[in-house]
Length: 276
Image (tube, rainbow, N blue to C red; front, side, top):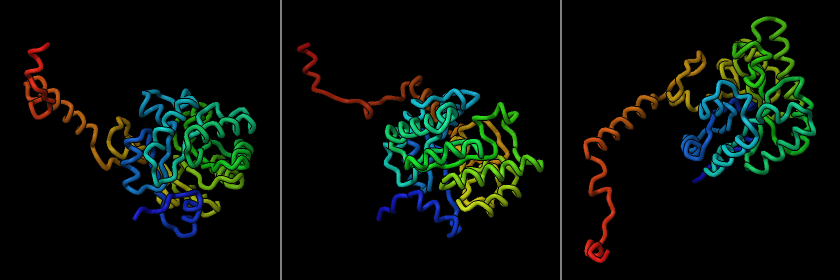
C-alpha cells in the first residue's frame, strides 16, 4: 500500500507528535528515487550542489536556472517525500517583490512543494511575502553558507551571548513570518535545544545537536562520496572507494579483453553481410 504524500501539514504535525523528521539533499532523479525508497520525509535540492556537483568553493555563484534544472530532475522521481529547493543567492536579496517573482518562477517551473530561504530577521519580510503568495517556505538560520563572507567563514555560530541572542531572534522572526519549519545549521547544542523549545514550528538540525525536531545531511556525506570531513557528519557507507574499485575492475576487464563478451553483444544473420 503506497503511503500518503508528505506535505507541509505532515511536517508541522511532527512538532506535537515528537516523531523525528528525516531530511536529505538530492540533486537528480536517480538519487531522489533511492532516498525516497528509504522513506525520508524531506528531499532538499540544496544549493550545496555548488560544492558536491559543480566543484565550487561557495554556493554564491549558483543560478536560478541551475536550481530549477536540478529540482525538475528530482521531481521526475515522483517522490512521496516533500521536495524543497533552495532559493539561490541573489534571488531574494533585492526585496519582497523580486523574491516573490523568483519564488513563483522556481515553484512553477520545477514543481517542488516548497522553497528554502536563508536569513533571519532581515529576511522576515521577504519570507512573509513569499508565504502570502501561497508558496511554503523553510527558514534557515545559524550558519548560512550564502552569507559566509559576512559571518567570517563557515564556522559555528552563536557561541557568545550576543550572537546566541541574535540567532534566537532570527529563529523567532522567521517562524512568525510563516515558515512551516526551519533549518538550524552549525549552532551549539544548548542553543539549538532552546530554540526548539521556544519556536512553534519544527527545527531541522545540521550540526545543531540531537534535540532538534529533525535532522538533515548532504547525501554525499552520508554515502562517503565527499572528501570533506566535518564534525557533524557521519558516513553510513564508503561509496567513494567502492566506486573507484568498480571502475578499476571495469577498466581491467576492457584491457584484458574480458568485456564485452558475446553475452553483452547483439547478433544478426551474418549472411546479410555477404550482401553488403
